Amino acid sequence: MGFFRNKRGPLVRANSSGEFFLRAMLLVAVFVVVAAAFWFQTEYSFKEIRSRGTVYDQTETLTAAQKTALREFASALRETHGLKLRVQVRNTPVVLPAKLDTKTVFIGINPYTRQVLVEFPPLLRKALGADYMYHLQNEYFIPYFEKNQWQLGLATALQKLWDDMGGK
Image 1 (cartoon, rainbow, N blue to C red):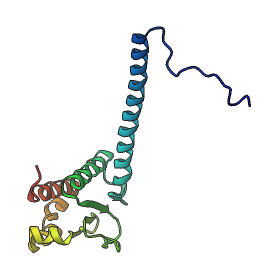
Image 2: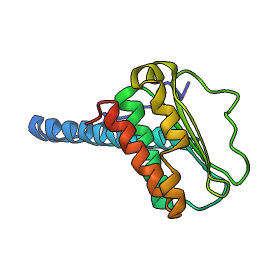
Image 3: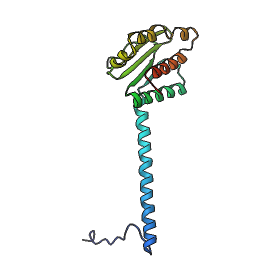
Image 4: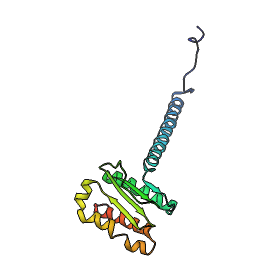
């Protein structure tokens, strides 16, 4: 029965009521700071995990800064418009992924064969018009491929898409 007779004192000890109040508030503040730090870390980790599948660079021609910018753009696209972005840079022929949902913007690029494959969700395709996706896939990247600046072409194409969707 010694277990139940443990005479443990209070969590916050003080000599006066003012000191007790101050120590109790400091203890609460520590819990709030730790909870807020945990919340922000979890949110950051969740965004990082969610954006990992956004960019696939088989050719290893995108820099780390470019990949980070694409992930940040994908995050903004998801938060603002509710759309996912998948970018694939391949050294093999680009094919449309089998599991592509109705909220995913897909852009596949093969810089060696100058192949571009673009797929929009049905609602976005209808909103921007039928020629928009065709132009982006067949005509837009030609000058960028000729100058070997397809990365810049990808960035400007995504910026144009953002602007045409009413982005701010």
